[in-house]
Length: 434
Image 1 (cartoon, one colour):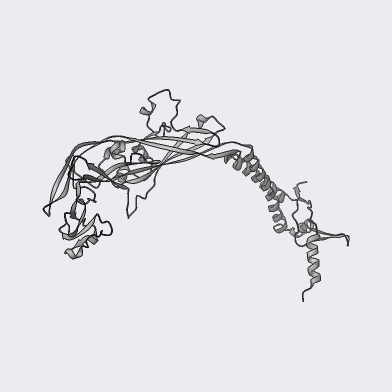
Image 2 (cartoon, helix red, strand yellow):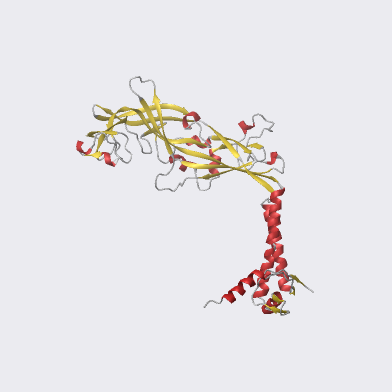
């Protein structure tokens, strides 16, 4: 049966008892040393790490950034490309002699402007003289392989990479070494050549899949113009300073890690030299993605001229990828001189996409974060008392004696002080040496 009398006494005891702190002076070198050591470590953490190293005395702001890029450099090719031509339902091979051509940034940078990124073409596959018509599908499209017309469903697009609409006819392939007939499609003809290297020569030398077409691209330069604003402090900084006495500074300087760290014009060779385990030649053949990071860590307690950027470079994509490695886009160049037919040259452009990332923050002295960190440090000092309590009550040989001295139960009706077995309140004590 429930004893309501005992329950009532327990509730009354919990409600109407009062716990007060008791100061116990313990003469122990061991405990005294531990107490002062813990206090010293906490003070060192608060002042040395939280306030000084982590700048806990400053208010911080994250910068709003804008980046524009400009690529400079020229390269020349002299291509002679073989491509299939359909004449009276028969395939013959034509030769596209492009002749000497100089490529500048308007040719190999596509699109002309991206948000905090730029693409530089370094290799390509040309499919010249395309026009709207009927031609066999690429033999790499398995669903378009056929033996007779019944295998080709009219008005259907072959799955997994089809280039056009099937007409319902099965015809001979126009690709070399094809082992099957292919369905005829309506599309831009001839169908895109999608295999490196192209069938042809450059300056009379056969094209190879071991080198990129634009080998001179390693000497191209990227100019970075970065503006960062810290709205909390009303401060704006740029990576191009106006205090240079030489008006031709940007024409002469080239970034390097040793003595030109602030120059915003960076060559592709320098970028790849600073990326461990990545070579330009390997990346340029099938393309890739490279990160350019601009870091601003500004202490506005000093002069604004001390707020300077730092550049770093790294590979973003996985060069060891087995499926869909590299980076490429397609570009169509249209021939507007032929008024009878729409003609174009399709370029599958392999290249390097440079992505610019900005990490900008600034700090300035403010009394509020300083007081907040200082107050948190004072609160941590109570940890020393807790740890020393654990030491004397549970670890030392005389723990029973210390416990009897620390916890007392005062009953005014009995007029006696009785030691308690378990703690009922936190206490404060002082440890010293005689």
